[in-house]
Every structure is written in C-alpha cells, then in structure tokens.
Length: 189
Image (cartoon, rainbow, N blue to C red; front, side, top):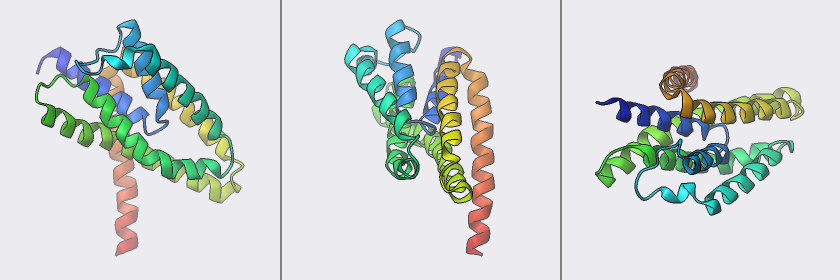
C-alpha cells in the first residue's frame, strides 16, 4: 500500500469517527477543506467542495450545536443522529477512499467509516445518558461542549496529522468496544 492510500484511509477514519461526536461538524470541515484543496475527494464527490454544500453543512452545524444545549432535547437528538452519524461516516470515508470498485468502496466505507462513527456515537450516547441520570440534565451542557470541541478538533487534526489521529481513534474505539461489550455480556449472563 502506498503512502497516499494510507493517508486517505487515515483521513477517512478520523473524519468518520468525528461524525460520532457531531454529524454535521465533520461534513462542514470536509466541505471547507475540499474547497481549499486540502481534502482530496474522489470523483463523484466534488459536490462537497461546492458553496451549496458548505452553506447547508454550515447551517446544519449551527443548529446541531445549539440544539445540544437544550436539556433532554439532546437525548432525543442522540436517537436521531445515531443513524445519521453512520451515514455521514460512511459518506466521508467513501469520499476519500481511493478504490475504483464502487461496491468495495461503499462496503468498506460502511464497515469502517460507519462503524467508526457508530462506535464513537455509542460512547457519546452513554456519556450523555450517565450525565442526564446523575445531574438531571444540568451537566449535559458540559458534555455537549466537550463533544463540540472533540468534533472540531478531530476533524481538523484528521486533515493535518491523519495517521496519528487515526491510530489514537482506533485505540479509543477499541477501548470503548471492549469496555461496553464486557458490560453487555455481563448483563446477559
């Protein structure tokens, strides 16, 4: 595998995982980066660099960020954004994956990109539920602020130091899956 492929996969993992924190932040960052020529989108995904995409994702980002500061609406948003995060993670990973076979590209995008977004989203949902339970929703603003920062930070860093971010995210996702996977199996047993 050459350096360009490894870098593209790392960027895809970073942006996809960011979708687990916020759906539209990584899409917005990717659109701006594509417009600036920093984000190497594949053929068929050039629309990400267009002004309509930037304006749509920018507007959606603002609404999403503000909505997460409304107690208990944030918990409702988690049920809506979980499938959206998987879709956004799939799209971002697929948009950068340098594979000619569409079936392979989209399948890999769904498994890796959607899976990364789902794993991070699962951890985010569990954190918000714990915060809601412990603080009756009053601590959720702190959780939301951390998630916003993580979404922006991970998205931007994925473009500039993609391999380091991908390694950190893979380790984080593995930890989340192992930690919560053990709890699920203990409850069933």
